[in-house]
Image (cartoon, rainbow, N blue to C red; front, side, top):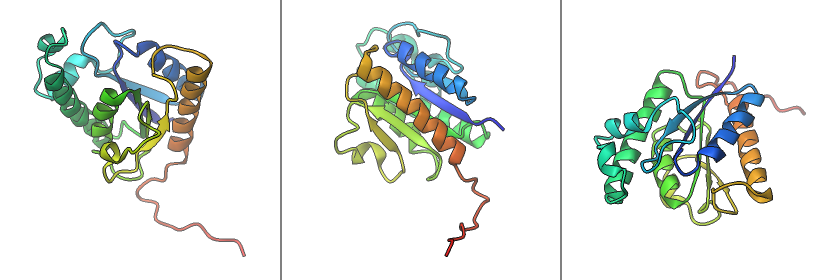
Length: 190
């Protein structure tokens, strides 16, 4: 049975990058559900779950956020809404793993949602802060951080390699994830 990776991100500023990762996962026969939490411009492609749905789940008004004048309020509402939606997808059996990419703001929003998931569910955050102290973002959860090396903004020889590695990593993680009902320990060959 095909696994599903939920891709969460700001499709207004990083839509092309997320479309690239989505296409790579499709080649690996991994299904995706894309959730948009951008608030400023229009998304680069149509997500499965819109920014309006995320804002509503977080008690926010997307129209109020569109002009960037209420950034703190927007980030709080989108983080809250994304966490609600991600947990709903997991509870409905529609999430085998989750991936996001971004800078410090996107990392804050995405990892807030990732922390709602149980330990063992694959969680990958490609981030500009991935090479530093990420304890504030990870909390007590098993979020894997991949340093983006360069800003998640467009394509060059470095970013294309990082995005490709991220797609490969999450595809591998979901293919190897152990269902909760499996409790047998592997045997050790003598």
